[in-house]
Every structure is written in C-alpha cells, then in structure tokens.
Length: 78
Image (cartoon, rainbow, N blue to C red; front, side, top):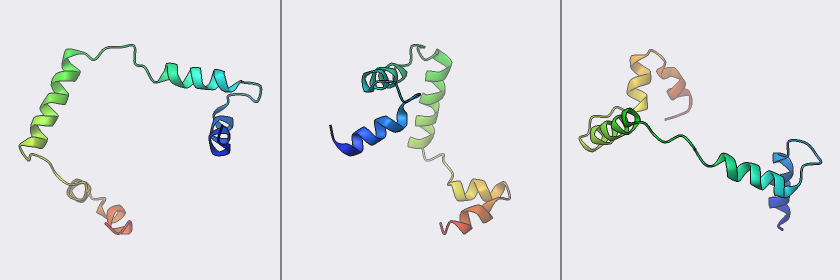
C-alpha cells in the first residue's frame, strides 16, 4: 500500500483501532444510495437539463449581483 493511501485511510478512521478493511467497507457502503429517485426529482433534473440546453442560465456573478453580494465574487478576482 502506498504511504499516501495509508495516510488517507488513517485520517478516515473513526477510531484508531478501526481496521483498514472496516474503513473501506464503511466508505463503499456509503457510496450507494438505497433510495431510488422519485418521479418529481427526475422531472426536475430533466427540466434543468432542458434549461441548460436552451441557454436559460445565468452566471453566478449575475445572481450574486442581483442578491447584492457581488463583492464576494469581486474579492475572489473572478
């Protein structure tokens, strides 16, 4: 095992006695979503995709400006 991989796994341990196998199994199990998407969620995603394809989008800068918070964007130099 690479030393950088070992360090990452060490950081992910819930307690020092947790094995690497336990860490990997816990992470693998958390990667699966056992709740299927609802029809409403799928419809909302499809609507968003259609908006993007049709060019009905706005930049973050414009949205932040409308909200009066464009200074945060300017501070980041964007």
